[in-house]
Length: 303
Ligand code: CP
Ligand code: NVA
Image (cartoon, rainbow, N blue to C red):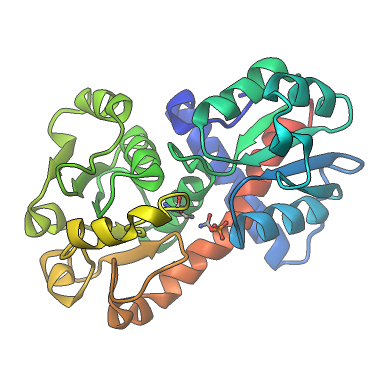
């Protein structure tokens, strides 16, 4: 593994190796065992969109690994004034040991990797959010003790989270159902990938069917970053695509609920369900730091 651009690029074995390392790093942190495995290394963090979790967890994670992180807002970088990704990649490769980038186009992340010579980590694009899904898988395994054979149900927009969850969950042997409006389906490349998993993947607009016997229920905002202008139309399209008490009643009685955050209460999830499952949701948020430290160690330790 040279980069983390999208989960489609990783094998099941690579995903499980990252989850195992993340568990180990979490254990070490909880027991005060230092793991300065990236001493002297620097991660650049390019942000073209807002962030709370991604920024703080990468920055603190890098510090805990003995390295340092640089916050690079696209508002201040020459990228924001049109300097090509190809040039930015070649320049930053000479200063840094790795780059985490949060941006709009997946192709910008792929180009950064193609033109640069250091590991690139996707910190969210319109297409994918692989770091979040590694943390989600880690959280599911923590609460359920295993991954294989579980049923995950996603309710809402076929967005970056849905795309990455479908790929990550199917790769590690879970079945996946998504309830989404017909005009808001996941990316075609992801649906093509999912076809290979037969009836382990279901896409429907029947929320009860999607949630039936689920072990894990997940949702995300109706309007993602960059879609602020569509807020009104989306509120109409997604009305009813919500995790609430009714939806939970279709799932297994011990189902957990995840949300990558930020959450919009009474839109994609009710405040009642959110608070009842806060222990899972905030463990999921914490696991971002452990999962990302695992990614950085694997990509940067011997690079
Ligand atoms: N879940 C997530 O990526 O959060 P931020 O947008 O705060 O980084
Ligand atoms: N789908 C959301 C995820 C935020 C972490 C967005 O892209 O804004």
